[in-house]
Length: 472
Ligand SMILES: Cc1cc2nc3c(=O)[nH]c(=O)nc-3n(C[C@H](O)[C@H](O)[C@H](O)COP(=O)(O)OP(=O)(O)OC[C@H]3O[C@@H](n4cnc5c(N)ncnc54)[C@H](O)[C@@H]3O)c2cc1C
Image (cartoon, rainbow, N blue to C red; front, side, top):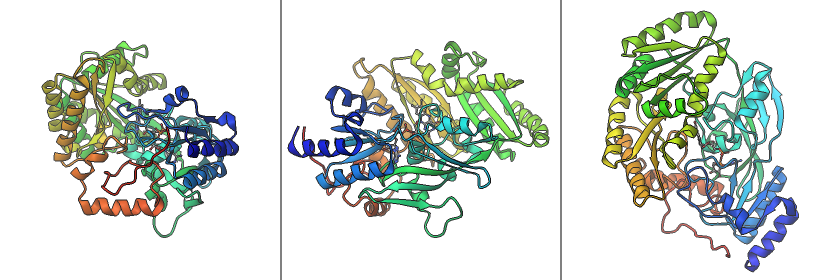
Protein backbone atom coordinates (compact mmCIF):
# COMPACT_ATOMS: atom_id res chain seq x y z
CA UNK A 1 0.00 0.00 0.00
CA UNK A 2 1.45 3.43 -0.86
CA UNK A 3 2.00 6.21 1.65
CA UNK A 4 -1.10 8.27 0.72
CA UNK A 5 -3.35 5.28 1.06
CA UNK A 6 -1.74 4.21 4.33
CA UNK A 7 -2.27 7.70 5.80
CA UNK A 8 -5.83 7.85 4.51
CA UNK A 9 -6.61 4.41 5.96
CA UNK A 10 -5.44 5.57 9.37
CA UNK A 11 -7.56 8.71 9.16
CA UNK A 12 -10.66 6.78 8.09
CA UNK A 13 -10.15 4.26 10.88
CA UNK A 14 -10.14 7.16 13.33
CA UNK A 15 -13.42 8.48 11.87
CA UNK A 16 -15.46 5.27 11.62
CA UNK A 17 -13.50 2.86 13.84
CA UNK A 18 -11.38 -0.06 12.69
CA UNK A 19 -14.32 -2.47 12.65
CA UNK A 20 -16.15 -0.33 10.12
CA UNK A 21 -13.39 -0.29 7.55
CA UNK A 22 -12.61 -2.94 4.96
CA UNK A 23 -9.08 -3.03 3.57
CA UNK A 24 -8.53 -6.75 3.04
CA UNK A 25 -8.28 -7.38 -0.76
CA UNK A 26 -10.40 -10.55 -0.69
CA UNK A 27 -13.21 -8.76 1.19
CA UNK A 28 -12.93 -5.72 -1.11
CA UNK A 29 -13.72 -8.01 -4.03
CA UNK A 30 -17.31 -8.18 -2.75
CA UNK A 31 -17.62 -4.52 -3.75
CA UNK A 32 -16.13 -4.76 -7.25
CA UNK A 33 -19.47 -4.64 -9.08
CA UNK A 34 -23.18 -3.99 -8.68
CA UNK A 35 -26.13 -5.95 -10.11
CA UNK A 36 -24.87 -5.44 -13.67
CA UNK A 37 -21.52 -7.33 -13.32
CA UNK A 38 -20.16 -6.23 -16.73
CA UNK A 39 -17.96 -3.59 -15.11
CA UNK A 40 -15.69 -4.66 -12.28
CA UNK A 41 -13.08 -2.92 -10.20
CA UNK A 42 -12.59 -3.36 -6.46
CA UNK A 43 -12.28 -0.28 -4.26
CA UNK A 44 -9.15 0.40 -2.22
CA UNK A 45 -11.23 0.82 0.93
CA UNK A 46 -14.82 0.46 2.09
CA UNK A 47 -16.10 2.47 5.06
CA UNK A 48 -19.41 1.82 6.81
CA UNK A 49 -20.84 5.14 7.96
CA UNK A 50 -23.67 5.80 10.39
CA UNK A 51 -24.00 9.59 10.54
CA UNK A 52 -23.85 12.57 8.18
CA UNK A 53 -20.96 13.90 10.26
CA UNK A 54 -18.93 10.73 9.58
CA UNK A 55 -19.75 10.94 5.86
CA UNK A 56 -18.59 14.55 5.85
CA UNK A 57 -15.31 13.71 7.62
CA UNK A 58 -14.62 10.79 5.25
CA UNK A 59 -15.30 13.03 2.24
CA UNK A 60 -13.02 15.77 3.60
CA UNK A 61 -10.23 13.22 4.15
CA UNK A 62 -10.65 11.91 0.60
CA UNK A 63 -10.42 15.48 -0.71
CA UNK A 64 -7.25 16.18 1.25
CA UNK A 65 -5.61 13.14 -0.36
CA UNK A 66 -7.34 13.59 -3.77
CA UNK A 67 -8.75 10.06 -3.64
CA UNK A 68 -12.06 9.35 -5.44
CA UNK A 69 -15.05 8.13 -3.46
CA UNK A 70 -18.62 7.07 -4.09
CA UNK A 71 -21.73 6.24 -2.09
CA UNK A 72 -23.22 2.76 -2.18
CA UNK A 73 -26.55 1.46 -0.88
CA UNK A 74 -27.49 -2.18 -1.46
CA UNK A 75 -25.52 -2.53 -4.70
CA UNK A 76 -28.56 -3.69 -6.71
CA UNK A 77 -28.03 -0.99 -9.35
CA UNK A 78 -28.03 -2.24 -12.91
CA UNK A 79 -25.87 0.32 -14.69
CA UNK A 80 -22.54 0.11 -12.86
CA UNK A 81 -23.25 3.28 -10.80
CA UNK A 82 -21.74 1.89 -7.61
CA UNK A 83 -18.62 0.47 -9.28
CA UNK A 84 -15.46 2.35 -8.21
CA UNK A 85 -14.08 2.34 -11.71
CA UNK A 86 -11.15 4.57 -10.70
CA UNK A 87 -10.62 2.79 -7.38
CA UNK A 88 -10.75 4.79 -4.14
CA UNK A 89 -13.26 4.63 -1.29
CA UNK A 90 -16.75 3.17 -1.20
CA UNK A 91 -18.83 4.99 1.39
CA UNK A 92 -21.35 2.32 2.37
CA UNK A 93 -24.53 3.93 3.73
CA UNK A 94 -26.59 0.73 4.05
CA UNK A 95 -26.30 0.81 7.86
CA UNK A 96 -27.97 4.22 8.05
CA UNK A 97 -31.38 2.67 8.62
CA UNK A 98 -33.27 4.97 10.98
CA UNK A 99 -36.80 6.06 10.24
CA UNK A 100 -36.65 9.40 12.08
CA UNK A 101 -40.21 10.62 11.71
CA UNK A 102 -43.59 9.77 10.25
CA UNK A 103 -45.64 12.94 9.88
CA UNK A 104 -49.15 11.86 8.93
CA UNK A 105 -50.61 15.38 9.15
CA UNK A 106 -48.14 16.63 6.54
CA UNK A 107 -47.87 13.27 4.76
CA UNK A 108 -44.13 12.76 4.75
CA UNK A 109 -41.55 10.47 6.34
CA UNK A 110 -38.00 11.38 7.30
CA UNK A 111 -35.59 8.50 6.82
CA UNK A 112 -31.94 7.66 6.55
CA UNK A 113 -30.72 6.59 3.09
CA UNK A 114 -29.97 2.97 4.04
CA UNK A 115 -33.62 2.18 4.86
CA UNK A 116 -34.78 -0.55 2.49
CA UNK A 117 -37.68 0.54 0.25
CA UNK A 118 -40.12 -2.11 1.47
CA UNK A 119 -39.24 -1.50 5.13
CA UNK A 120 -40.72 2.01 4.88
CA UNK A 121 -44.03 0.75 3.43
CA UNK A 122 -44.14 -1.99 6.08
CA UNK A 123 -43.66 0.62 8.79
CA UNK A 124 -46.44 2.75 7.27
CA UNK A 125 -48.87 -0.16 6.83
CA UNK A 126 -50.57 0.19 10.20
CA UNK A 127 -51.24 3.90 9.54
CA UNK A 128 -52.92 3.07 6.21
CA UNK A 129 -50.09 4.70 4.23
CA UNK A 130 -47.31 3.52 1.92
CA UNK A 131 -44.33 4.78 -0.07
CA UNK A 132 -45.61 4.52 -3.62
CA UNK A 133 -42.48 3.91 -5.78
CA UNK A 134 -42.05 0.14 -5.69
CA UNK A 135 -39.05 -1.08 -7.73
CA UNK A 136 -39.02 -4.84 -8.19
CA UNK A 137 -35.90 -4.77 -6.02
CA UNK A 138 -37.88 -3.17 -3.19
CA UNK A 139 -37.07 -6.00 -0.77
CA UNK A 140 -33.36 -5.11 -0.95
CA UNK A 141 -32.67 -1.75 -2.58
CA UNK A 142 -32.23 1.27 -0.34
CA UNK A 143 -34.19 4.51 -0.45
CA UNK A 144 -30.92 6.43 -0.94
CA UNK A 145 -30.18 4.28 -3.99
CA UNK A 146 -33.77 4.76 -5.21
CA UNK A 147 -33.39 8.54 -4.96
CA UNK A 148 -29.96 8.47 -6.65
CA UNK A 149 -31.37 6.42 -9.55
CA UNK A 150 -34.83 8.03 -9.61
CA UNK A 151 -36.21 4.50 -9.38
CA UNK A 152 -39.46 3.46 -10.97
CA UNK A 153 -41.69 0.47 -10.36
CA UNK A 154 -45.00 -1.08 -11.38
CA UNK A 155 -47.11 1.42 -9.43
CA UNK A 156 -45.23 4.48 -10.73
CA UNK A 157 -47.57 4.61 -13.74
CA UNK A 158 -50.25 6.29 -11.65
CA UNK A 159 -48.24 7.63 -8.73
CA UNK A 160 -45.10 8.89 -10.48
CA UNK A 161 -41.49 7.79 -10.12
CA UNK A 162 -39.25 8.52 -7.12
CA UNK A 163 -38.63 12.17 -7.99
CA UNK A 164 -42.35 12.85 -7.53
CA UNK A 165 -42.00 11.68 -3.92
CA UNK A 166 -38.79 13.43 -2.84
CA UNK A 167 -39.50 16.61 -0.90
CA UNK A 168 -36.05 17.34 0.49
CA UNK A 169 -32.65 15.73 0.87
CA UNK A 170 -29.86 16.31 3.36
CA UNK A 171 -26.68 15.96 1.33
CA UNK A 172 -23.00 15.79 2.09
CA UNK A 173 -21.62 17.72 -0.86
CA UNK A 174 -18.44 16.48 -2.59
CA UNK A 175 -16.34 18.95 -0.52
CA UNK A 176 -17.78 17.63 2.77
CA UNK A 177 -20.29 20.44 3.46
CA UNK A 178 -23.57 19.19 4.94
CA UNK A 179 -26.57 20.97 3.46
CA UNK A 180 -30.28 20.53 2.80
CA UNK A 181 -31.82 20.71 -0.66
CA UNK A 182 -35.56 21.33 -0.89
CA UNK A 183 -38.09 21.52 1.91
CA UNK A 184 -40.73 19.12 3.25
CA UNK A 185 -43.18 21.96 2.73
CA UNK A 186 -43.61 23.95 -0.49
CA UNK A 187 -40.21 25.11 -1.70
CA UNK A 188 -39.14 28.34 -3.40
CA UNK A 189 -36.51 28.87 -6.10
CA UNK A 190 -34.71 26.21 -8.10
CA UNK A 191 -35.79 22.61 -7.51
CA UNK A 192 -32.45 21.40 -6.18
CA UNK A 193 -33.90 18.27 -4.56
CA UNK A 194 -35.26 17.45 -8.03
CA UNK A 195 -31.83 18.03 -9.55
CA UNK A 196 -30.20 15.75 -6.99
CA UNK A 197 -32.74 12.98 -7.59
CA UNK A 198 -31.42 10.80 -10.39
CA UNK A 199 -27.90 12.23 -10.17
CA UNK A 200 -26.50 8.72 -9.58
CA UNK A 201 -24.14 9.61 -6.77
CA UNK A 202 -22.27 12.27 -8.76
CA UNK A 203 -23.52 15.37 -6.92
CA UNK A 204 -23.04 14.25 -3.32
CA UNK A 205 -24.19 11.71 -0.76
CA UNK A 206 -27.73 11.72 0.61
CA UNK A 207 -27.78 11.28 4.39
CA UNK A 208 -31.42 12.10 5.17
CA UNK A 209 -34.54 12.02 3.00
CA UNK A 210 -37.93 13.68 3.38
CA UNK A 211 -40.27 11.48 1.35
CA UNK A 212 -43.90 11.98 0.45
CA UNK A 213 -46.12 9.20 1.74
CA UNK A 214 -49.42 8.27 0.18
CA UNK A 215 -52.63 7.01 1.78
CA UNK A 216 -53.40 3.46 0.70
CA UNK A 217 -56.34 3.30 -1.70
CA UNK A 218 -59.75 2.29 -0.36
CA UNK A 219 -60.07 -0.47 -2.95
CA UNK A 220 -57.85 -2.38 -5.38
CA UNK A 221 -58.84 -4.63 -8.28
CA UNK A 222 -56.25 -6.71 -10.10
CA UNK A 223 -56.80 -8.37 -13.48
CA UNK A 224 -54.67 -10.83 -15.33
CA UNK A 225 -55.28 -10.87 -19.10
CA UNK A 226 -53.78 -13.51 -21.40
CA UNK A 227 -52.99 -13.07 -25.10
CA UNK A 228 -51.89 -15.32 -27.96
CA UNK A 229 -49.52 -12.63 -29.23
CA UNK A 230 -47.12 -10.18 -27.60
CA UNK A 231 -47.90 -7.61 -30.27
CA UNK A 232 -51.63 -7.80 -29.54
CA UNK A 233 -50.92 -7.41 -25.83
CA UNK A 234 -48.88 -4.30 -26.68
CA UNK A 235 -51.85 -2.90 -28.59
CA UNK A 236 -54.12 -3.58 -25.61
CA UNK A 237 -51.87 -1.38 -23.46
CA UNK A 238 -52.49 1.55 -25.79
CA UNK A 239 -56.25 0.86 -25.81
CA UNK A 240 -56.48 0.88 -22.02
CA UNK A 241 -54.67 4.19 -21.65
CA UNK A 242 -56.49 5.75 -24.62
CA UNK A 243 -59.81 4.91 -22.91
CA UNK A 244 -58.96 7.38 -20.15
CA UNK A 245 -58.36 4.72 -17.49
CA UNK A 246 -55.11 5.28 -15.56
CA UNK A 247 -54.29 1.94 -13.96
CA UNK A 248 -52.16 1.95 -10.82
CA UNK A 249 -50.00 -0.59 -12.65
CA UNK A 250 -49.94 -2.08 -16.13
CA UNK A 251 -47.26 -4.73 -16.53
CA UNK A 252 -46.46 -7.19 -19.31
CA UNK A 253 -44.72 -10.57 -19.27
CA UNK A 254 -43.98 -12.76 -22.27
CA UNK A 255 -44.22 -16.53 -22.67
CA UNK A 256 -40.73 -17.46 -21.47
CA UNK A 257 -41.15 -15.29 -18.39
CA UNK A 258 -44.54 -16.83 -17.60
CA UNK A 259 -43.05 -20.30 -17.93
CA UNK A 260 -40.04 -19.49 -15.74
CA UNK A 261 -42.26 -17.95 -13.06
CA UNK A 262 -44.70 -20.85 -13.09
CA UNK A 263 -41.88 -23.38 -12.85
CA UNK A 264 -40.27 -21.53 -9.98
CA UNK A 265 -41.30 -22.30 -6.44
CA UNK A 266 -43.66 -19.34 -6.14
CA UNK A 267 -46.13 -20.42 -8.83
CA UNK A 268 -48.36 -17.42 -9.45
CA UNK A 269 -51.18 -19.06 -11.41
CA UNK A 270 -50.28 -17.55 -14.80
CA UNK A 271 -51.71 -19.34 -17.88
CA UNK A 272 -48.65 -21.27 -19.03
CA UNK A 273 -49.65 -21.42 -22.70
CA UNK A 274 -50.06 -17.63 -23.13
CA UNK A 275 -47.75 -15.69 -25.44
CA UNK A 276 -48.11 -12.72 -23.09
CA UNK A 277 -49.99 -11.65 -19.99
CA UNK A 278 -50.89 -8.18 -18.83
CA UNK A 279 -51.36 -7.38 -15.16
CA UNK A 280 -53.77 -4.51 -14.80
CA UNK A 281 -54.25 -3.09 -11.35
CA UNK A 282 -56.86 -0.43 -10.67
CA UNK A 283 -57.12 1.40 -7.37
CA UNK A 284 -59.23 4.17 -5.90
CA UNK A 285 -62.66 4.44 -4.31
CA UNK A 286 -64.74 1.24 -4.33
CA UNK A 287 -67.62 2.96 -6.15
CA UNK A 288 -65.24 4.22 -8.85
CA UNK A 289 -63.76 0.76 -9.35
CA UNK A 290 -67.22 -0.81 -9.64
CA UNK A 291 -67.43 1.20 -12.86
CA UNK A 292 -63.80 0.99 -14.04
CA UNK A 293 -63.30 -2.76 -13.42
CA UNK A 294 -65.88 -4.01 -15.94
CA UNK A 295 -64.77 -1.33 -18.43
CA UNK A 296 -61.15 -2.46 -18.25
CA UNK A 297 -62.24 -6.08 -18.63
CA UNK A 298 -64.29 -5.19 -21.70
CA UNK A 299 -61.38 -3.27 -23.30
CA UNK A 300 -59.01 -6.17 -22.69
CA UNK A 301 -61.35 -8.64 -24.41
CA UNK A 302 -62.05 -6.19 -27.23
CA UNK A 303 -58.28 -5.76 -27.72
CA UNK A 304 -57.75 -9.48 -28.20
CA UNK A 305 -57.32 -11.06 -24.74
CA UNK A 306 -58.50 -14.67 -24.78
CA UNK A 307 -58.79 -14.79 -21.00
CA UNK A 308 -59.29 -12.16 -18.30
CA UNK A 309 -59.23 -13.25 -14.67
CA UNK A 310 -59.68 -11.05 -11.64
CA UNK A 311 -57.93 -11.81 -8.34
CA UNK A 312 -60.75 -12.77 -6.01
CA UNK A 313 -58.85 -12.57 -2.75
CA UNK A 314 -55.94 -10.56 -1.35
CA UNK A 315 -53.93 -13.81 -1.22
CA UNK A 316 -54.51 -14.36 -4.95
CA UNK A 317 -53.53 -10.76 -5.72
CA UNK A 318 -50.36 -11.16 -3.69
CA UNK A 319 -49.53 -14.38 -5.57
CA UNK A 320 -49.95 -12.64 -8.92
CA UNK A 321 -47.61 -9.84 -7.82
CA UNK A 322 -45.12 -12.24 -6.22
CA UNK A 323 -44.79 -13.83 -9.67
CA UNK A 324 -44.10 -10.46 -11.31
CA UNK A 325 -41.70 -9.28 -8.62
CA UNK A 326 -39.91 -12.61 -8.50
CA UNK A 327 -39.67 -12.91 -12.27
CA UNK A 328 -36.04 -11.81 -12.57
CA UNK A 329 -35.01 -14.38 -9.99
CA UNK A 330 -37.01 -17.05 -11.83
CA UNK A 331 -34.96 -16.41 -15.00
CA UNK A 332 -32.00 -18.06 -13.29
CA UNK A 333 -33.66 -21.33 -14.37
CA UNK A 334 -33.19 -20.48 -18.05
CA UNK A 335 -29.48 -19.77 -18.33
CA UNK A 336 -26.42 -19.04 -16.21
CA UNK A 337 -26.28 -15.27 -16.74
CA UNK A 338 -28.65 -12.52 -17.73
CA UNK A 339 -28.41 -8.96 -18.88
CA UNK A 340 -31.40 -6.79 -18.09
CA UNK A 341 -31.85 -4.03 -20.63
CA UNK A 342 -33.79 -0.88 -19.70
CA UNK A 343 -35.10 1.45 -22.38
CA UNK A 344 -38.19 3.53 -23.01
CA UNK A 345 -40.41 3.91 -26.06
CA UNK A 346 -43.61 5.86 -26.61
CA UNK A 347 -46.20 3.27 -25.56
CA UNK A 348 -48.02 3.63 -28.91
CA UNK A 349 -44.89 2.15 -30.54
CA UNK A 350 -44.76 -0.89 -28.21
CA UNK A 351 -46.12 -3.47 -30.69
CA UNK A 352 -43.67 -2.69 -33.51
CA UNK A 353 -40.70 -2.24 -31.15
CA UNK A 354 -41.39 -5.58 -29.45
CA UNK A 355 -41.39 -7.31 -32.84
CA UNK A 356 -38.05 -5.74 -33.72
CA UNK A 357 -36.53 -6.73 -30.37
CA UNK A 358 -37.47 -10.39 -30.85
CA UNK A 359 -35.93 -10.16 -34.34
CA UNK A 360 -32.66 -8.96 -32.75
CA UNK A 361 -32.72 -12.00 -30.47
CA UNK A 362 -33.13 -14.26 -33.53
CA UNK A 363 -30.35 -12.48 -35.36
CA UNK A 364 -27.90 -13.02 -32.49
CA UNK A 365 -29.33 -16.45 -31.57
CA UNK A 366 -29.93 -15.33 -28.01
CA UNK A 367 -32.71 -16.33 -25.69
CA UNK A 368 -34.65 -13.20 -24.81
CA UNK A 369 -37.56 -12.65 -22.44
CA UNK A 370 -39.57 -9.56 -21.66
CA UNK A 371 -41.10 -8.44 -18.40
CA UNK A 372 -41.74 -4.73 -18.13
CA UNK A 373 -43.68 -1.65 -17.12
CA UNK A 374 -45.81 -1.59 -20.28
CA UNK A 375 -48.00 1.30 -19.12
CA UNK A 376 -45.17 3.80 -19.36
CA UNK A 377 -43.38 2.17 -22.27
CA UNK A 378 -40.45 1.17 -20.04
CA UNK A 379 -39.07 -1.99 -21.65
CA UNK A 380 -36.90 -4.61 -19.96
CA UNK A 381 -35.76 -7.16 -22.55
CA UNK A 382 -33.73 -9.75 -20.65
CA UNK A 383 -30.92 -11.37 -22.59
CA UNK A 384 -29.93 -14.80 -21.30
CA UNK A 385 -26.41 -16.08 -21.88
CA UNK A 386 -23.57 -18.09 -20.45
CA UNK A 387 -20.46 -16.01 -19.85
CA UNK A 388 -18.35 -19.18 -19.98
CA UNK A 389 -19.49 -19.87 -23.55
CA UNK A 390 -17.06 -18.26 -26.01
CA UNK A 391 -18.68 -15.39 -27.93
CA UNK A 392 -21.84 -15.18 -25.79
CA UNK A 393 -20.86 -11.97 -23.99
CA UNK A 394 -19.93 -10.20 -27.24
CA UNK A 395 -23.31 -11.21 -28.70
CA UNK A 396 -25.11 -9.79 -25.66
CA UNK A 397 -23.28 -6.46 -25.95
CA UNK A 398 -24.08 -6.21 -29.66
CA UNK A 399 -27.74 -7.17 -29.18
CA UNK A 400 -28.16 -4.74 -26.26
CA UNK A 401 -26.79 -1.92 -28.40
CA UNK A 402 -29.10 -2.87 -31.29
CA UNK A 403 -32.09 -2.82 -28.91
CA UNK A 404 -31.15 0.61 -27.60
CA UNK A 405 -30.87 1.88 -31.17
CA UNK A 406 -34.35 0.55 -32.02
CA UNK A 407 -35.85 2.29 -28.99
CA UNK A 408 -34.10 5.61 -29.59
CA UNK A 409 -35.10 5.52 -33.27
CA UNK A 410 -38.70 4.95 -32.18
CA UNK A 411 -38.58 8.23 -30.26
CA UNK A 412 -37.67 6.69 -26.92
CA UNK A 413 -34.66 7.01 -24.67
CA UNK A 414 -31.68 5.10 -23.25
CA UNK A 415 -32.96 4.29 -19.76
CA UNK A 416 -36.25 4.39 -17.93
CA UNK A 417 -35.12 3.70 -14.38
CA UNK A 418 -31.81 1.83 -14.08
CA UNK A 419 -29.74 4.92 -14.79
CA UNK A 420 -26.86 5.71 -17.11
CA UNK A 421 -23.96 4.87 -14.82
CA UNK A 422 -21.05 3.35 -16.69
CA UNK A 423 -23.19 1.20 -18.91
CA UNK A 424 -24.85 3.87 -21.04
CA UNK A 425 -22.50 6.80 -20.51
CA UNK A 426 -20.99 6.49 -23.97
CA UNK A 427 -24.42 6.41 -25.64
CA UNK A 428 -25.53 9.77 -24.20
CA UNK A 429 -24.52 11.47 -27.45
CA UNK A 430 -27.26 9.48 -29.23
CA UNK A 431 -29.86 11.65 -27.56
CA UNK A 432 -27.99 14.78 -26.40
CA UNK A 433 -26.00 17.28 -28.45
CA UNK A 434 -22.48 18.33 -27.45
CA UNK A 435 -23.97 21.57 -26.14
CA UNK A 436 -26.48 19.68 -23.98
CA UNK A 437 -23.70 17.53 -22.54
CA UNK A 438 -21.50 20.57 -21.91
CA UNK A 439 -24.30 22.18 -19.86
CA UNK A 440 -24.72 18.95 -17.86
CA UNK A 441 -20.97 18.90 -17.17
CA UNK A 442 -21.16 22.49 -15.92
CA UNK A 443 -23.96 21.56 -13.53
CA UNK A 444 -22.00 18.56 -12.25
CA UNK A 445 -18.85 20.64 -11.83
CA UNK A 446 -20.63 23.21 -9.67
CA UNK A 447 -21.42 20.48 -7.13
CA UNK A 448 -18.38 18.30 -7.78
CA UNK A 449 -15.58 20.64 -8.97
CA UNK A 450 -12.74 18.26 -8.11
CA UNK A 451 -14.53 15.39 -9.89
CA UNK A 452 -13.74 13.09 -6.95
CA UNK A 453 -17.35 12.09 -6.24
CA UNK A 454 -18.23 9.01 -8.32
CA UNK A 455 -15.99 9.86 -11.29
CA UNK A 456 -16.52 8.57 -14.83
CA UNK A 457 -20.28 8.09 -14.47
CA UNK A 458 -23.30 9.38 -16.40
CA UNK A 459 -21.52 11.78 -18.78
CA UNK A 460 -19.13 10.66 -21.54
CA UNK A 461 -15.49 11.29 -20.70
CA UNK A 462 -13.76 14.20 -22.45
CA UNK A 463 -10.07 14.60 -23.19
CA UNK A 464 -9.75 16.82 -20.13
CA UNK A 465 -11.48 14.39 -17.72
CA UNK A 466 -9.39 13.68 -14.63
CA UNK A 467 -8.01 10.23 -13.96
CA UNK A 468 -7.06 9.69 -10.34
CA UNK A 469 -4.03 7.59 -9.60
CA UNK A 470 -4.60 5.66 -6.43
CA UNK A 471 -1.83 3.45 -5.11
CA UNK A 472 -2.04 -0.32 -5.49
C1 LIG B 1 -33.85 -7.92 -9.53
C2 LIG B 1 -33.79 -6.43 -9.70
C3 LIG B 1 -34.95 -5.73 -10.00
C4 LIG B 1 -34.90 -4.35 -10.18
N1 LIG B 1 -36.05 -3.68 -10.44
C5 LIG B 1 -36.04 -2.33 -10.55
C6 LIG B 1 -37.25 -1.60 -10.79
O1 LIG B 1 -38.35 -2.16 -10.91
N2 LIG B 1 -37.15 -0.27 -10.89
C7 LIG B 1 -35.96 0.40 -10.77
O2 LIG B 1 -35.94 1.63 -10.86
N3 LIG B 1 -34.81 -0.27 -10.55
C8 LIG B 1 -34.81 -1.59 -10.42
N4 LIG B 1 -33.64 -2.27 -10.18
C9 LIG B 1 -32.37 -1.53 -10.10
C10 LIG B 1 -31.96 -1.08 -8.66
O3 LIG B 1 -32.54 -1.91 -7.69
C11 LIG B 1 -32.33 0.38 -8.43
O4 LIG B 1 -31.56 1.21 -9.28
C12 LIG B 1 -32.14 0.85 -6.98
O5 LIG B 1 -32.66 2.15 -6.86
C13 LIG B 1 -30.68 0.85 -6.53
O6 LIG B 1 -30.64 0.95 -5.12
P1 LIG B 1 -29.37 0.43 -4.30
O7 LIG B 1 -29.59 0.75 -2.86
O8 LIG B 1 -29.09 -0.96 -4.61
O9 LIG B 1 -28.24 1.39 -4.90
P2 LIG B 1 -26.76 1.03 -5.35
O10 LIG B 1 -26.75 0.02 -6.42
O11 LIG B 1 -25.93 0.77 -4.14
O12 LIG B 1 -26.31 2.44 -5.97
C14 LIG B 1 -26.92 2.91 -7.13
C15 LIG B 1 -26.41 4.34 -7.41
O13 LIG B 1 -26.87 5.21 -6.40
C16 LIG B 1 -25.78 5.88 -5.76
N5 LIG B 1 -26.16 5.99 -4.34
C17 LIG B 1 -26.45 4.98 -3.49
N6 LIG B 1 -26.75 5.49 -2.28
C18 LIG B 1 -26.65 6.83 -2.38
C19 LIG B 1 -26.81 7.91 -1.47
N7 LIG B 1 -27.14 7.73 -0.19
N8 LIG B 1 -26.61 9.17 -1.92
C20 LIG B 1 -26.27 9.41 -3.21
N9 LIG B 1 -26.08 8.43 -4.11
C21 LIG B 1 -26.27 7.16 -3.69
C22 LIG B 1 -24.57 5.01 -6.04
O14 LIG B 1 -23.39 5.78 -6.04
C23 LIG B 1 -24.89 4.47 -7.42
O15 LIG B 1 -24.53 5.39 -8.40
C24 LIG B 1 -33.66 -3.65 -10.03
C25 LIG B 1 -32.50 -4.36 -9.71
C26 LIG B 1 -32.56 -5.74 -9.55
C27 LIG B 1 -31.28 -6.47 -9.20
